[in-house]
Picture 1 (cartoon, helix red, strand yellow):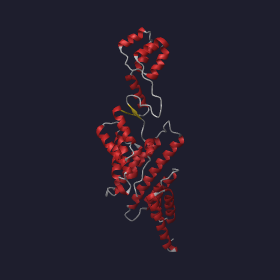
Picture 2 (cartoon, one colour; picture 1 turned 180 degrees about the vertical axis):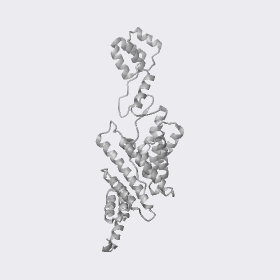
Picture 3 (tube, helix red, strand yellow; picture 1 turned 30 degrees about the vertical axis):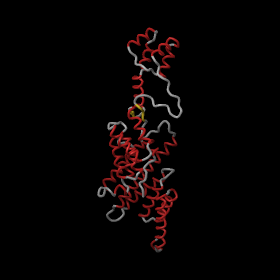
Picture 4 (cartoon, helix red, strand yellow; picture 1 turned 90 degrees about the vertical axis):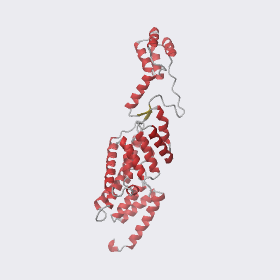
Amino acid sequence: MKIKFALLLGLLLFLSAPGFAQIAGTTPAQGGATSAPAPMTQKEVITELKKDGADQLMKDLDRRGADFELDEEFEKQLHHAKATDDVIKAVRAAGPKERTAAATAAALAAGEILIPPAENADFKAVQSELDPTKCISMAEDYAKKYPQSAVLNYIYAFEAHAYQMKNDAPKTVEFAEKSLALKKDYIDMLMTAAAIIPTPQYLQVHHGEEEQLLNKAEGYDQAAVQGLDQLKKQPTMDDATFARQKASAMAGIHASLGLIHYDRASQGLMGWDKDELAKAEKEFQLAVTVTDHPDPADYYRYAEVFYQEGRLDDAIAAFTKASQLGQGIVKEFADKNIERIKQQKAQMTPAKQ
């Protein structure tokens, strides 16, 4: 089976990424919005002060800013035009340097990450690239070009998801962990690494390290749960959407934990470990019930647990749900397992049922 996606792309932004702001200047208007008015010139400031008065001038300075820095010569001109101390302060604050500093402070206070103008276009290009191969190449170029970037962890995250789209488990985990090395509480990458590590595609290339890796994945899941508990709703998001997306994230975490316990159960020295199977069953049950839109792959794994526990009817029921909700390879394998188990039941004697 192909690697299961840990999260939808939209959930990536919801869970972990703060706002991104350009350090200098205002982002160009989009979607037909009206462009911001041009900053005031020295001539406009003097003219408006004389014609409309101090109050109107200060309102316009606050709205438009100024295209100059207040120097000693212009301050003399303002005093000559009978500017008050408040007007002088307003003119000084309206200059490009002061407005940029104020905008930077406001962005930092709002939890936004500031991107220098030189990086802004490159970052947006990587962020919006949908072709995984192109995204990986662009991300690699970005990391070389801006090795000290404040958003490098997000670039690695985009690269991790691109490798996930290509079903490359080792590379997905590699870049998820590179992102976590820069931002250890990045929920999306915690969940991505935790979801991929316990898959056969990853463990098969790390033979002999299974126990250590499963412990690491469990730690990532625990950190993700703590992050979700502390997560605050974005101002633009309604309560229902916030609750729905958190539930979807929790379903992913429970599914990951279920697979971790299932893997541990399979490594029992005397056959399948019943205690670990019971833990896996509980986690998969939560994975398919905490969200209104359960992943069919989680029902598939849930059915596998039931089968190893010898609960054939429950296994058929779970495989049936996987088939009903799924498509492609999930549906195909679920249907085959349903028929196989039914044949197995038919061959059993009444005493063994």
